[in-house]
Length: 184
Image (tube, rainbow, N blue to C red):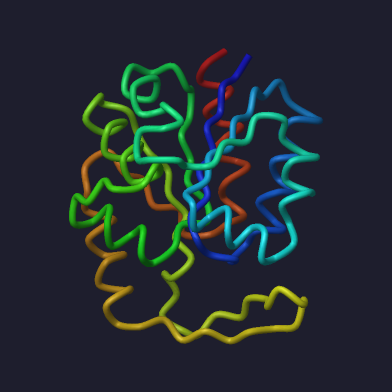
């Protein structure tokens, strides 16, 4: 069984798409999926009224209590998961990762996985040079301008050892399927 750990931080970007992909992977492929959320990730998922859908789709969902509880950093570090993907990743979490701050469940897991020689796949919400259109919790569109500091941090993220930055959400499924094939 292919073990996938999926992290969510505090952004509403591609939440619907992420949950739909999680459902697809579990229904159509041999994927053992665990979802972990920062406290802010859980708050945003609930604010967007996606919590029940997430819990319906994924049986193993954990919310951060501390940067080390629930304890996933150690298992990640020693390769107990085949892939660790973080999607969506907020600009705040990207900045923390770039500057080595590991004070949330996700940023700590990223740091410890890389220290253990594991690759981490990250899909940041704020990486487009043009404004992005996302949705408000009520479903209406919301246009967001990406700040220069966020784009600078994305450039730095690309340079970090052990991190693979995913530029388009549509690449995630193919990435996971290719990793599944490699494992076979």
